Image (tube, rainbow, N blue to C red; front, side, top):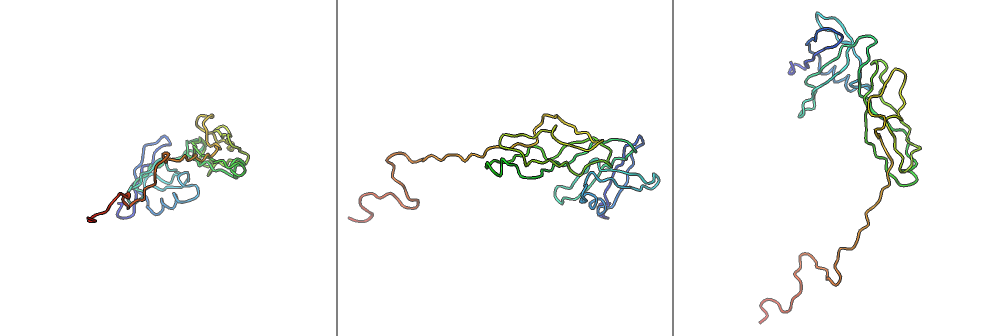
Length: 195
C-alpha cells in the first residue's frame, strides 16, 4: 500500500464503529502543509461508509524519511467540540527588549483548546509590545473567540522578559606567573650538544 503512495488510516468517533481505509499520501501531505495543518477539517469518502467530515487525531511519521506512514482521523459530528492544539503567536517587540536590552523567553509555543473544528483559530495572537523586564504573560492573558475554551493552568507562564547579564570575566593568571607560549619549551641554561 505504501509503495503505491497510499497511507493506512483509521476513522473513528461519531458513535459508530471504527473504519479502516487508505488515502493518497500526496493528498494528506497537502492537507498537513495547509495553513490550518493538523486542525484542517476535510471530507473523506469511504467505500461502503459514505462521505464524512474528519480531522487528524493522531499521525505517525517515518523517523528516517520524514513521511506520513499512518493516520488516525476523527469523524466529526455537528455541534461536537473537540480538543485541538493551536499555536501561540507573539505580535510586536517588548519595550523591555527594545529599550532595556532584555530578552523575551517563550515557555509555551502552543496551547490546547476545546471548540468546534469550524471555530478553531489558526493561532492565538498576543501583543507583547508593552512587556517590560520582569513582566510575565500567563495562559489567563490569552484572548480567544466565542465558543473556544483554553485548557490548562491559567497561572502557567507563556513568556517573560528577563535581564541579560554578561558574566564578568576575572583574570585567571596567578600573581608572578610567566606566560608560556605553546609549542616552545621554557628557556633553560645550556643547549644540546654544546660541550
